[in-house]
Length: 328
Image (tube, rainbow, N blue to C red; front, side, top):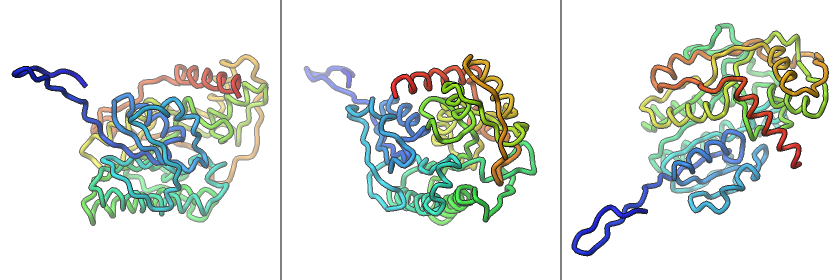
């Protein structure tokens, strides 16, 4: 609040206008970074999370922030709140977690998205849904543009997540067509950074944690399969730009720099001197052999491209995990 001016002895005050944001999955890796970004912009944030993979420790520094509220809630059940923007991020995103209870994962994608779209319709609120590069499956087109319809096994062990996100996208665009809802869909590619879950089995967190524990670095398959890794602050910037844009998408948000998994392991082993050997295990069923986003749409329509290099991002992430293990 600040003084704008004076007239006839009266002081006129202005207050920054806050916007109320609902973030599902707000205690998770991406959700906590989005929470931080919005609170730093003096916006109000309501965070929903059932804490299956999310962690309240990710949010504790905002516990006394008057613009922040946490609600423990499972989005497969409806909830009624008054908000202006809905950021729908909630869903287990690593194979270890989403395969733990595949039926629940599918319900989270379908019922959770259905409930959030219903809330957005009632409030006439904007809603951004975070879909995934997994909707492309094991792609036959490389890199993957948004027009590519994918190569997904609909009955495989990963399908609870892949097909769950695909039906959630369907719901989003049906609500847009039928109810003229302001819907945004982001297809997120591999993302890394501080607040990743140590035991979730993702490539970068897995390698870093194994190296810091002086364990062998485990590669599944030959290591020649490729991924593209986007640092979390770049990802959040892309989501914010999409939410504030006049397009619905879907839009790929990811880093187009493609790396072999074995090369990522070697980079991390050099950065952590006590790393041991690299060992190889069988590739999990339906694991994609290559993944790289085409980001022409994001660049053209959102003015977005990643800025943080892999070297810089890895250094930040390694320091996070060093602190994590020192204090846990």
